[in-house]
View (cartoon, rainbow, N blue to C red):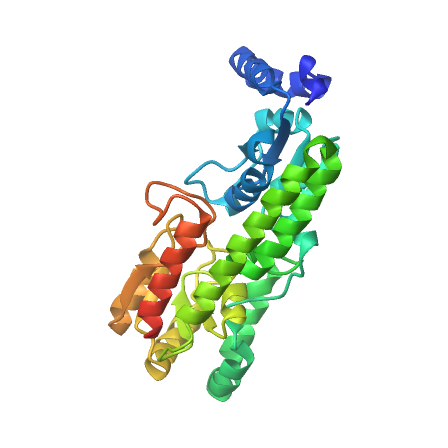
Length: 333
């Protein structure tokens, strides 16, 4: 479909030249391979690529800017990837998660730019989510200054537009899927009927996943779970849980000593059994906290990428593994 692939644009040539002849050859090869009549989509990271593949089906060629095993927050766009954007039909990304992607797509002349953050409502989450206000009141008198410290630093340099981890709430992810489906139908009207059908099937699967979480977490002993970083705010809010994160929305943020002490006390008071860590970030902090408090550790995967260490081969399998881990940690019956 992408007629621009019959030649390499000046921008692509310039970017390739910056990397040397070997990269120019690779870019040329990529361009030729991509000229197959398909709708060419560049996705920013796995949750966006998954949507594009499920909705686009056989009519799309999807390339992810974030490689498997790479922490998406840390991505820096290369010259080759900039050229790749130049030669694509559409970009699907989530504004506020990857600044270098936001900048590259903003400057790109690509015809169809789909911002997933604009297809649903973003909310503010920090170190606490779900029943955070109630939980904050419960501990507020004793730890008020510490909460203020965390809030100040949790939102200061993280995601100004709100928490971007919308894909971890199946309901919000379904809203995004519907918006992506409409964007594909508009940009590639020849295959609109298939995009519409594929979107409906995906939304149905996401609604079924939502029901599994609702029923699976209905009878539990505690609402509180502890994670390394605050990726699960939407999930917690959807199912009436309270996420207590060691760090804020940024997984690389080191917690303060006051925050660690506070989490130790919360774990004791709320019957927390497990400290969750994730596959793409070091488990050192989680294991240190768990060791100091006599808790277990387990994986709660934010599904930012699928690797050999993931508990499943796609979004749905990993999310169901997350449900199993949460049921065990929360004492669900």
